[in-house]
Structures are given as C-alpha cells and as structure tokens.
Length: 118
Image (cartoon, rainbow, N blue to C red; front, side, top):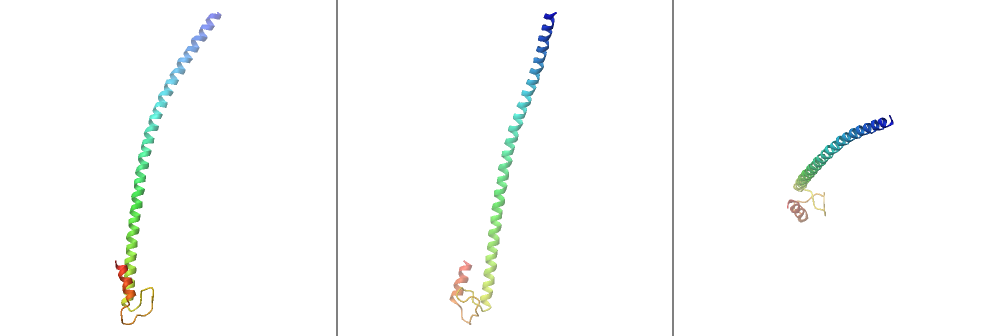
C-alpha cells in the first residue's frame, strides 16, 4: 500500500511539473512578445522625438525670420520718422537732436540719415 501512495505522489508531482512547464512556456512567449513590442515602441518614440526636434527647429527658424522682419520694419519706420522730422525742420543728429534747424542742411543729420538708409 505504501508503494502505491508513493507512486501516486510521483505521478501527481509529474503532472504538476508538466503544468508548470506549460505555464513557463506561455510566460516565455509572453515575455518575447513584450520585448518585441517594447523594441517597436522605442523605435517609434525615437522617430517621434526626431520629428518633434525638427518641428521645434523649424519653428525657431520661423520665429527668427519673423523677428528679423519686425526689426527691419521697425528700422524702416524709425528711419521714416527721423526723415520726416528732418524735413519738418528739426535736427535728427546726435549733436543737435530735436533743436530747430535753420534753412541750411546739417551735415551731421544728412550723414546720419544716409547711414540709416544703407
């Protein structure tokens, strides 16, 4: 009788081992699938980061271009205002700025306006 119990115990243990092996195989397959998905997600993430960096660089360049255009527009507007003031009879040079100009031309003002125009 004792031998029968011992044999039953070994058979039961063998069934548990087979069940554990099946679970282990399933776990290995699941881990393999997860590793593949992780690799694919990392590649996609790297691609998206590169694309995002490209977009940020393009936006930064566009912003610089806009700033340059605004600065050029500001310079043009400021030059126009100074030229108008000079035509109205006021000095725009640093030597006599804002003081009324007599009928003759001021070489300092003309030099200054010519520098702005270049």
